[in-house]
Image (cartoon, rainbow, N blue to C red; front, side):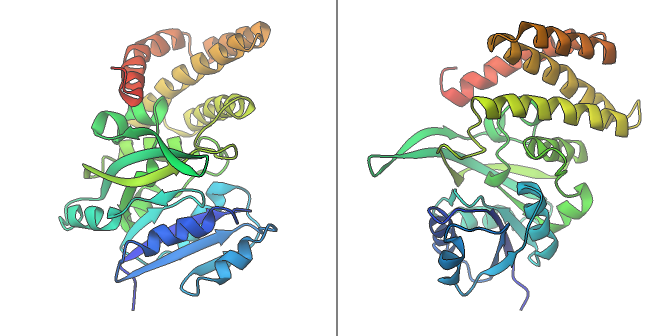
Amino acid sequence: MTPRLSIVTPCLNRAATIGAAIDSVLAQGHPSFEHIIVDGGSTDGTADVLARYPHLVVVREADRNLYDAINKGLRRAQGDLVGLLNSDDLYAPGAFAAAEAALADPALDLVIGAAEFFATEHGREVTLRHLSGAAAVGLTEANAIGGVTTMNAAIYRRALFDRVGLFDDRFPLAADKDFWLRLVLAAPRCLVIPQTIIRYRSHAGSLTFAAGDLRDKLSRHLLDLARARLAECAPGTPAHAAYRRWHGWAVGYRAGLQARQGAVGAAATTAMAGLAADPIWPLRFAARLPGHWRDRGLRRGTA
């Protein structure tokens, strides 16, 4: 029987957390689902953990990166509905029921719920942040370009991936934002619900919580992706205009990060290269700043 819901989980050396992720799916008590694990070749005992769950569909082969693995899972997904779960995160209790209740409306293409961020301290879970509402987690250009992209808090109709395309794994630190912006441009019928769907685990190896060198790489990927998309999108189209705004934000973000790190020369080079590509990028960057700081305050609970 074809499953109603497909969950796709990319995985590499997550023996410590993958069991909890799988259990969070089983705890939903869903009557018709498949859980596809795409393991890039774990060597830490992950295979032993997966072997304890005979219901899993396991694809074990080398991949280029996280998004190449997700794409492999999406190509195998059979369900009408699809969820994306990282190997170190959890679905919140009742997530599937809340999402399916909303998606009972056949006019909807996806539903987005709240996202919780937590850490384990001294053996206890501590909630770090809770994001909900359209401003914080909604399908908006602001969230795609400069905000938090909580793509794992969404449940999608499978047909939406056929329409929008899969993840661009050329830029593995920015492919989620690029996918979110392509969704924005496709204008799917979307509903934001108050129920918590995803719980993101904060730990040193998490890509969700970029810091230090990872943040520097992220800023480079954001800029490189904007440049690539501008070269690929026809001038005068909504996509070209959106990626032009992305480019302005990415130049300012990377130059500012480089300056804060003391690399003033590199910051100047980034800024000048940005001017060569778009002489008014500083205006585009400045135009986004008020909304960025407002939304940042909402996400941190200070606005």
